Image (cartoon, rainbow, N blue to C red; front, top):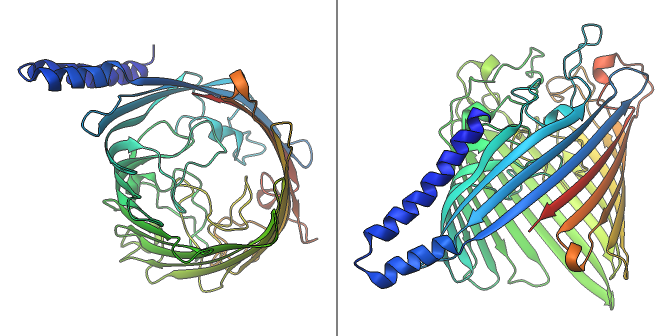
Length: 464
């Protein structure tokens, strides 16, 4: 049994024994001790399983890849005792079979997708990978909660994502406050992150650069991995629904010594005739470097001193009981590159499409149309999306961190969620096709695993 697995089992037993010791120590208070013991021994055990097949087909015969990965996990949470709950979750991942992740000397471009299903830190490992994903204590009052420890949160900037075997997890204190009518407050302080595609935990500064680092604005290779100084992240979000049919949310994220990012978004809907309604949304994001952007040496900083960026987004949609459609637009101005560590989550833009990002870009025009249909008598849903993404030239490192060419992307996403005794199962299939937009010939490093490629994803989820 791997050493990590043994360590996690010891940690699990320690939490359980600690609760038991506490219950025995309070034996003089019979009612309280029985309540603690009852909370611990009558908690809920929830297993989960995730199977992920991914296959990437690049233009030509080189760099094609596939992988079969499986994740097994178990989560345990006590029932409440005086509004307090304890929770723990262990996850185990395994590479069933895949193409080799060892770079070919003839074709030194690294795999971008399948490798991320497992562990980017140990790409050649064939062992069972394990992660203590959750370990927390939570206090709940009415509809609100305060949770401290390892957990999974969902914000515009740090979020689970669904493109890997396990989501991004965080460690810290998180408040979810819903006791004010039509108002939701979320926020907290984070001190560590375990990004998707990893099994380890990292300090905030350490987590930057695990994914490819791209280029500095001057064209030199970015070198911020292991060189960022940051003590933590402060996040605050508020969602207001008093001005119906409008919903307004504002988010602020401060990354110590690195950057500040703020977002304001408004969403609304109105009916012309039942059950048909129109939807619309507007979004504005602005960010600024803090101090030296993570390191006094510009070549090792995450964000250049004095750098800033802005993005504007809008959407308009039409919905019925079965149909949903929208046209979406996003503009990143040419004032600077929009930066958000890919290790932490997906883009918050209306134009986001799974398997690609516009993070690291400036002077971007993105257009995306989406349409989905939900069958009435069958638990089947299908969505088609198509987008055009106009980016700066691949040699414009000031505004194109990852040398990504302009591209079009088409996604077909089908999901099936059975009812009845199979209601905990979900089957998903995602097909992605990306095409180079301009006709100029590009060398492999601007094409492979970026454009002129297709990908198939098949996912099975089971969770109680």
